[in-house]
Image (cartoon, rainbow, N blue to C red; front, side, top):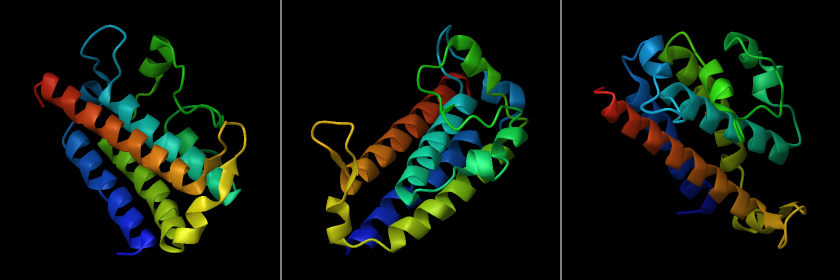
Length: 168
């Protein structure tokens, strides 16, 4: 298996897991938090998608779908490219209230489509390219892609767990 196929396989597992976590839930269930200070299913799925959108946009040196694709407005949120969930307060978590699972899945599908296009063109040599010099050691494309997938899979697992806690 080549690098591109491996990464497409890895990232391609995220959308079906998201669908499973949100399927059939209404707005109230998506926004419900199992405990004070905990994240909702809506926020977890929104956040994992925002991170992928934000980071892949940086890798492509382009705009985020959140801003350029009008997704922020569809969520009733400002199109702030830095609003991706890191450091959110309880109030900011509560503000992520999609009207149903459809918009969460549609946004992820749009982001996944762009991510897949990036991944399909990669070679093993591409993974060594430095993409972020703000860290020591500098971050390579391979490390960044593993980080994005890791974040996505952790959060979709958390969403599935919260769904189970809520009796879904």
